[in-house]
Each structure stands twice: as structure tokens, then as C-alpha cells.
Length: 118
Length: 137
Image (tube, rainbow over all chains, first blue to last red; front, top):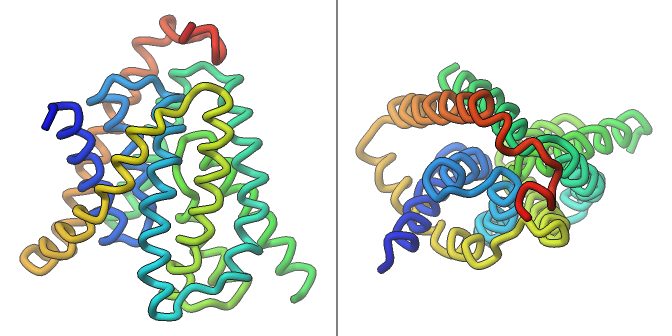
């Protein structure tokens, strides 16, 4: 296994563990590791994280779906404005400096850490 | 559904998507309380339903970023496909270590990431100020 593939496997494991344990997406783990450990630029890291999250969330939704916990219509009610929002968010991201994304992310991480401890 | 609830859903959905697109996360942190508050779901059903919403938002976001030239699809697929390893590892660890210790460990890791990303944002500011497509050639 190449070291690059090994690093991706570690990122996947950390994101899956975080997601499974705390019921949130793994994005707050994936994006910093892609930037700090694999040398990604910010925009590439966030774009690739979104694709990875599709896989993680699809597996989780399928597992929950087997127990009848997923409400498809209600998911669509919140996901449709969410989809509009993500189109706007990605467009906005192209217009700000790449490093500003790291700045915003560091603030989100502090908030997330505080929420975990409380 | 009341008009106020619909407005709330749209507001939360838009905010979650906007934040998700900006920093590359799925938006579940906002979807879950939105589903609890405005659609009266319990916590477990809200988390499960949020995951499906995250699939759609993540897919649309990844598609847009691909259009901007910011997607490394192969790496994304590798992380997505291998993530169940983490779910298993996390569950196994949770049986040995208290959830409180795990939460504190992840919080510590996030604070280290926060520090390093903040330094990167400040120190490298001049290196990547150009808009997308210029900085990366």
C-alpha cells in the first residue's frame, strides 16, 4: 500500500469514527487532514470532502433506513434548500482568497471542540 | 405545515448548504436541530434523516466543485469507501474507552487543527490571494 493510500485510509477511519460516534459528518476531520497532511489547497480539500461525505452519509442513511428511521420526504424538504445553499456557498468560495477558507475553518473547529466538551 | 415552519426549514436548509459549500462539510450539524424543531422528529430519526439530506447536499456541492476544477474524485471515493472501517473502529473503541474521553480527544485534535489552519491563514496570506483558477493555474 502506498503511503498516500495509507494516509487516505487513516483519514477515512478517523472521519468514520468521528461520524459514527458523534452523529455528525466527518467533514471537520477530512478537510484539515487533506490540507495539513496531504498538501491539498483549501478549495480542493473542501470539494473532495463533499464527495467523500456522500459515501459516508449514504452508508449511514442505508443502515438507518433498514431500521425505518429515515423519513425521505422530510429529508427532501430540508435538502432542497440545502442544495440551493451549497450552490451559493461553493460559488461564494471561488470569490474569496483560498487562505480565508482556512481562517473560517479554524473558527468552526474551535466551536466544534467547545460543543464536544460541553 | 405552518408557514412559519416552512420558512424555518428553508432558512436552516439554506444556511446549512451555504456553510457546507463554503467549508466542505455536509451541514448535518444544522440539519439535525432543524428537523427536530420544524418537523417534530425525535433525535435518532432526525440524525438518520439528516444523513440522507447530507447525501444530496454533498452530491450537489461536489458536482459544483468539480465544475470549478476543485474535486479529486478518486481520493474522495477512497475516503468514502474506507470510512466504514472507522465506524467499526470507533464502535470498538467506545466499548473500551469512555465516550467522554473520546469527546475530549477529538476536541483536542480539533483545537490543534484550528491552531495550524489559523497560522496557515495568517502566514501564507500572500501566497494564495488570487481567485480560483488563477492561483492554481
